[in-house]
Length: 372
Image (cartoon, rainbow, N blue to C red; front, side, top):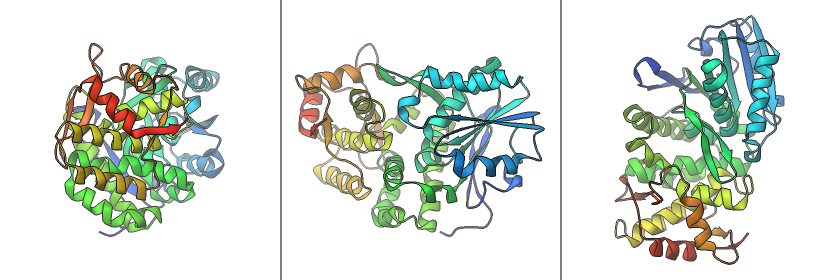
């Protein structure tokens, strides 16, 4: 493995909706890196209050020769703002600038910015093109790829949205250097998930290189982003709209989304909740006889080394497990009130299935002991 001067290209094969993930260092400022971006008269950069001072002007400069007009809208930062009210700020900017169908949106930021920009692009004038320029590890390895866009509802995460593919994903690894340690760890959760669900060798590689990733070693980081995107591209290429296989990408997310909703969005970062959720899903897999205790301990150790929580919060003082179950029943994977979990059936193999409530309660009671 080595960091090449030319970017790594990972294709997403979706017929006439196909596009490329471009991964490398120093891409943000290179006008040629946006050659595959849609042709249009106007561009709207959607970013947030944290990312805008760091990268918005640099992106405007890189796009200056491609678009006649470039506008910017700056959203508040945080999962708590992934709402209708914030989404309307994007629509306000589009309508205020008189943007028509010859407009392309650029999502410059993390997963919240990317999800809301994609949803706005899917909705504005019934669809305008957009480009993902993710600046967090979590967004580069997961949320920017695959076309899932959404906002949150108080009763459930990402429950209102659309499948709408970007036309380019540009991952500048240099932007990760400004991430706070907590955000870096949150991104590592989405990297870690790819090993148990699809690639046993990648899980072994992560165990060897997790400290290097924490230290942002450029060679290790480039490979982690590349391999994560390759696995996600393979899955999305077979199941774009999550009718089957793509659901495996939600390993840890059923429990994790319940943590986020139960605690209040933003109390735990998404990756923190997913990290703990993976431990809970592994525990459930073990109790169902799908994996052994040795695997569970391997995963717990890896998640801990990534700086992520492995013990969940109590989100209800009277009936904690009952509250978790209620929140998980409104998860998108639930069917007729039955909760569907992504479980591990041997390292590198995921299955989606239900489990008896009594067994799920046992896992929640064993794993969620921290006072909220």
